[in-house]
Image (cartoon, rainbow, N blue to C red; front, side, top):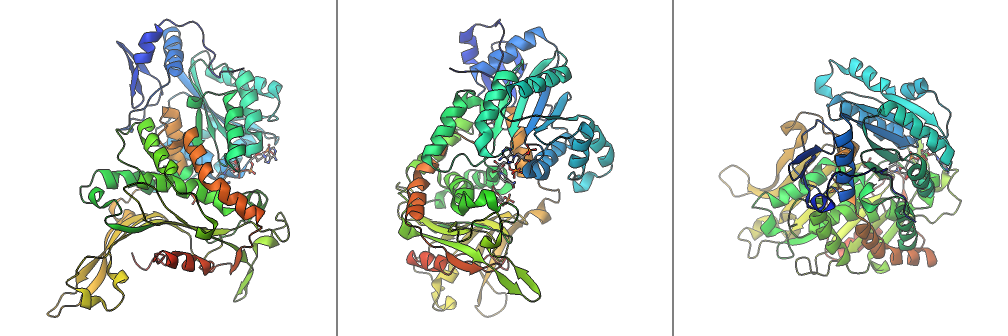
Length: 558
Ligand SMILES: NC(=O)C1=CN([C@@H]2O[C@H](COP(=O)(O)OP(=O)(O)OC[C@H]3O[C@@H](n4cnc5c(N)ncnc54)[C@H](OP(=O)(O)O)[C@@H]3O)[C@@H](O)[C@H]2O)C=CC1
Ligand SMILES: O=C1O[C@H](COP(=O)(O)O)[C@@H](O)[C@H](O)[C@H]1O
């Protein structure tokens, strides 16, 4: 039985006309009717997106009956780490930047007993203002906090969600109401919440959308089960599966760089690219999240989602348009053309304790929430290959690790050697050092730089490696929005381009599930590496097998 979040009343528009409706940015055109579906005054999106016929129908019906509209954002799991660290600050930043509709309300929902005032105090501790506009900050914060309310309830109680519904209705005051639910909770309660909310917190008269956090399952089977269960209560177009790496500025820029600069796209293939590296490195361990992490490990936590999503964007063919479906169609093709991931192309590691001067750093298994003798990897490196004409034979290397020497996320593209290089002798014996490398540093200190060979000025002929460097903080002195700001705004605007479609998810799990099973069944022992080091040496052997040298993460090369 299918329950729908949208509580539709009679429609005044012929359904054939609704089918023909198209949306540009936040506006939908329906014959001569012009509807502001997304109800935000923030005009930023150059993308077109498809609004579902149901969403259009809901808005048409409601807008013909009501004047004005409201947006309610309910953060489920409001007492948690992600809500405090990312979601409330992102909502405030959107408010501060005037990106939220005039009439909006934020609700926190969790089991912890809090008053509205206590929620506001909790949120206010995490709020910051954009560096360049501090003047109105305090006022804006106060105004924002006055829009925040809290309701304490159980995640599986229909009764509690019915009370939430009446509180939402009270704030919506009979206007056209759009509702966004952000499920910032452990995955084992996603379905309970979707069920209770769809059954009892469902009196929105406009659209209802649900942002679902990762992890979306542990393998193909559990992910499929989760998708099927959620679809009992939500339509696919209501589900926004978030992968916050897709909201990072440099990841957004990847397609711009490639498709709007003549110089890159012709080089984007096996003809010129030797290997591509996707690197994630954190300089802290699983502190405080060991309980969650031990059930997942670094491959599920970072590789199967964040790094694979970036790889898919990197390697996809030119989409027909910037429409979400066109982009996601191309990404799915990449994921489905990947060769099975072999155990021999993967190495895993786990950090061990380490003393440095007077400071001592814990081992992963020192965490009281991690079982002694756990084999869960906190580091992994993998070589992946694509079976298609563009990328045949090109190693795509991934490396992800916690408790390493630095915090950094990068995409590194190493180009081939210059055939018959006239300056060969200037490079000595190591010709790899003479090849061009394009680096997109996602964080910290966002930058794009291209390593080139250059003549050292003077009468001699000495060559030098230097960078053509676009350092964001020099070129764009304004603060870069956090990924969660972009993604929450996209969900409000109905823009699905940066959210994961269910077939993308299936393809991503199909690639990683056999490997994860093999690692677990064979009880592969991770190579230990000291906390704060560069990770297991095995990663270098793996890369060397494909004549690859990992890029230098020291930051000295930019
Ligand atoms: N934290 C992070 O940096 C990131 C988190 N995520 C994902 O976001 C979601 C939320 O993460 P995070 O905030 O860290 O999670 P938390 O563990 O902090 O959980 C969020 C809230 O859910 C409730 N909760 C926790 N455990 C249970 C349980 N076993 N049963 C019922 N309710 C529970 C608690 O609220 P109460 O007790 O008040 O009901 C808690 O405050 C998760 O799916 C996580 O995987 C994704 C990326 C990064
Ligand atoms: O999804 C996750 O991401 C964070 C890293 O995010 P970042 O934006 O700070 O780079 C990671 O720490 C966490 O383990 C993982 O679940």
